[in-house]
Image 1: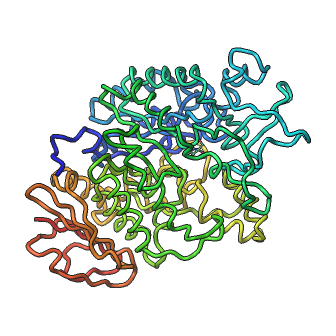
Image 2: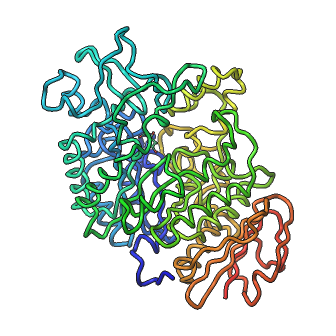
Image 3: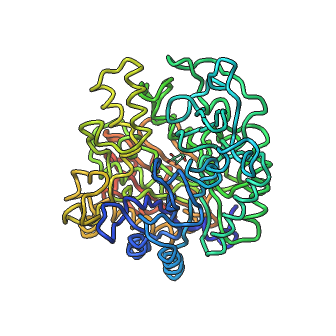
Length: 555
Ligand code: NOJ
């Protein structure tokens, strides 16, 4: 049994993801600033947030909104200055909110000095800092790997007369982690930020850092004759050795946490990654976010899925970290569609869905990560044309849908459903122009619902998603079992209700969330001797849940 006193600060708190470009613009440029984050720390404190993960704000050409880093030790001028970052870290600490930075270490920008040198010749100091490979005799790319953003994962460099590997966009060349000088430079960068006082790191795309010993074609998995780079390179044996070295040099002995983004790691493998012998404190694995894709071969043809499958995936992750390691609970991030669309296949308002799923988010075992706007019940926006999207991946997804035989309307509908830009629309603060996000035209359109879905209006409405998130955050801070308690799934076969028990030392809670739009029944013996601690619909009749009703009982 876990004791509260044995837990680190980051296990007891709530984390919040900030996409700074869309959070708050303090200078009237249409994009958010670091000073905008500092200005809203009180708001975050009111949600019980103790850690803010800020997506990359380093100097960058912004081809992938900062995930293409030109200089890891500089702040991009569009976000402000290093002084602004120092101020944010310091003010945050005063309020008990630690800043967590995003380390993008699988790749850099093509504008990074390291790459600019590396591409010049085959024998300079940086020649071996990236993954270079000769062409095949016919001049074509070394393998048939398809990059994650579409097209070949290899780009030709005239100067070197070689190809370089890019798991993502061509402007994001992959670093060569086999080179000790690369690893040491990355460690120095992380330590620079630790010394500045950050509370930890989210580490981007980490499963791709180790490439296979032999680069070989894979079986074609699409009409283009290519093979997904993910299948060819993710989670290559030996990867944990690199990460152990990194952990010892950056994490050990420090009061920080590291959460890796690890697409391709299964819940059953969590033990190797987190916990006593692991390399991270937590790992974002994606088994549950893959469920709404159904068993589809390609993202734009999602098949049916059932709630029981989603619960199974979450339970596997809960069990994978039950006695060793810790779990970052999330339903949204800046790469996912909004959860009220993604995880529901029923009618009902976005607000009710946000409250029902938010109940699960804030009561599972682990550290909840709220994506900005999730607490307000954001839903996907209606995108009227491809031009409205900014995200480079959405554009390539659109092309891919066309290549799969979709017509233009169907391809646009698929992007509406899955685009990453759904998570990136500006934060809605109030009912004023541009939802109070910026005095200039925002870089992405504000959602049409901002007159009702915003911080100001929802703060005044006790039945809003925001008020519900605040209620649950408070409950979590008062009830130890919601933090320390063991997890046991109840009603595992139900396709309507997600129910689980959190058993603490001397106290327990039972959470029941009806994630369907039909009334649902449960055995009231599950809550025997317990009181209703919080309910989305106020009082609740034992044994019955109204559509999208969620309740927390405790004793
Ligand atoms: C994962 C990040 O979350 C995503 O936004 C980015 O495009 C890729 N990694 C590449 O860095």
